[in-house]
Length: 114
Length: 116
Image 1 (cartoon, rainbow over the protein chains, first blue to last red):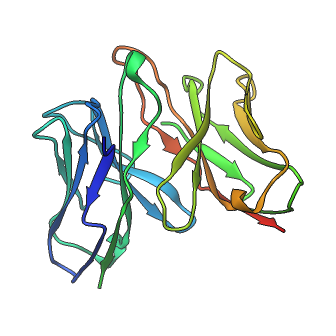
Image 2: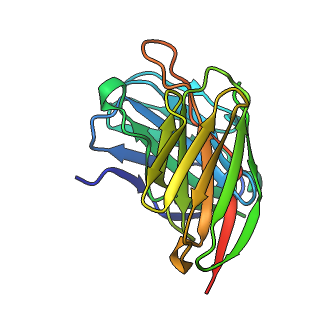
């Protein structure tokens, strides 16, 4: 039982490059989230998904796209990376109703855009 | 949407003293209030949470209080130890059933330092 797994853990991109961050959970959770964490800003919600095939915008969605083709995976894409996207990205998931026991976070991806 | 304010941004205490971190929220529909601890370079870890149907919850040295009328909640850590040093985040959301479930919105964090 791995919980929430994020890959990669570190990445350096050049401005304009693209990449995809992968989040995988093995808890059969319906809801999944992508947050970014910047110094002094806490965690801000980028996009989220309430189930397979669904996605929605969070607080700071610009410059990112997401997909949830399978229930266990939630992908975050950067089509044209910018230095402002240098951040630590956390994925999280949770169950619903009687299966809600709080949010479980992945270990994070540290992304640097130069 | 929900907005969560957290104070103070930094807090330094002597080992053995108590630490209190306070948060306010804006959305009266919010009913779930977790606290996360994040050590340097690690993921946020849930340490305690409270729902709006109770006013206080305690787990060993950690307690959380909630005042729904004033829309604020607080984390209390007693008998602090050096290993309590970390960044603490409060958060709020509406964990309703059916179609009324909101997203977890975080405060900006409090860096707690416990001096031996």
